Image (cartoon, rainbow, N blue to C red; front, side, top):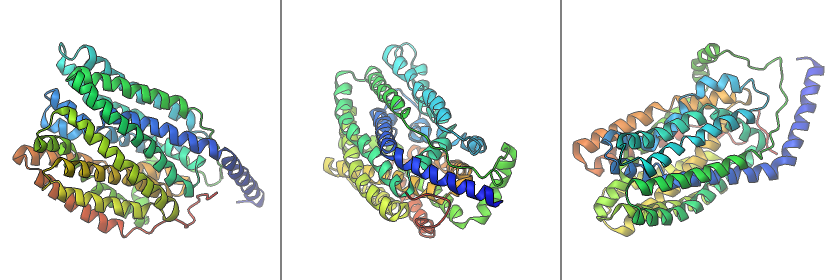
Length: 437
């Protein structure tokens, strides 16, 4: 690299950092509110609690009940590796995120309309729309997921990201608490498909509001070293992946611990169904489970935001895995309403804390110039265990309908995941081309 080029890059970096600092209050607030509205809206048909019950009420098969909690996440990871090489070329990523984000939200209109007006005459359409909406929404979002995370990395410095994730989830949890009461009321007065259709319309309203707020983000593009920029074609980028994994031990351990963390999808699909059966409660009681879950989410996010900003995401991930291990054991013996409300509280705390810790750590493990590809690797290569967990959940439930087997399998996955997580070096403070402003 020539002296002139190096000087220009350094000057550009200073200008970039100054602009990021100037826009930080606005972008910080926008990321928090937009994410809170989006995730809070999803709570009205929460994949982990409400959606399995929707599928069951529509006479969906057991395998579909087991699959729906991870449909949206699975959709997100499908396209990531196939678009990462494009993201690494784009000087500005926000326009692409806005485009895909539109279709990501519109996907939920179909079940809202069909459940509200056509469920009785076209029950197959109703079930298909419920199953496909989160998957299609995830696919559209996944097309630019790495671009969105790149936008977060460009606009929020690493020592502020955990609190962004946490505040997003706290806002969503507060919405979710209200959602729990609304869910219970709606399903009491409008049981069946009509009630669920109303919940989907509410969900879509929140997602629409989040879209317009997201548009307010001010993107700042970092200076590019053209001599060392990556401009890979898709095939070349895919061929580089094995070498990246072989050369980065932390990446390998991260892939293993995150893959095993998907073991929670063994017990999640039937958790609310199991609770309602044990407690002999109607489907409207799921609203109270959602409320408890979201209150726990607030507690988990407060903890995760503080720890993530101060010491990094790894310790947050450790605590979340320990919490899920407790849940896996406890659900096998719980018999009272108070116990299940406590379980869903702990579940909310662990689930949201894991989201904060995982997102914080994954961005910080990535070299800046290959960040999109690294994020694509992390998302796509850990996805198969979501499918395997769903299949195992279906097999165990169909075979015995004993929740203890689901809890045992999940607990084993959490223990092994912890062992590999402990091997990862906390990247906070290492120089990977990140900025701490």
